[in-house]
Length: 148
Image (tube, rainbow, N blue to C red):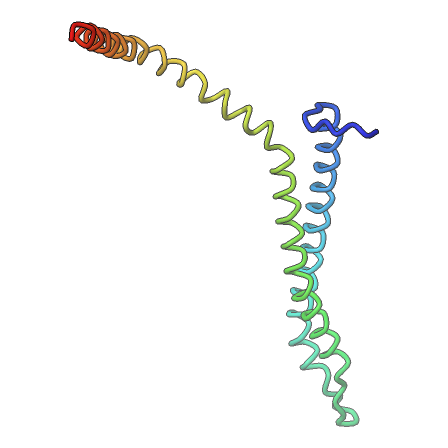
């Protein structure tokens, strides 16, 4: 029978390593696609004007549209790839954040704990005094109830 224990440190470390690896892969893939899409957008944008000017062949008065469509195609492909790269980058970042959540929580607790401890130490005398007064009131109420 399979072990169904959820709070197993070894299992957590193995799964967390897989999640971190997946996050890094998605992040790297997303950034790569984003960079390629930006290069395609820029080259398509810059080449469109030059191609449009050079596409008209003055020797035989014909219009050569291969350059224009080639650069517009680069621009369109870059525009199509850009959101995909952006979404993969965001997904990779979120997965990495989730994978490091335990360390982030531990860091936060280490920052807050001394302040919470100091607050508890300062509040303890006041709370104990109030609890003592409440106990006296209850005891007095019980005595009066017993007299009746």
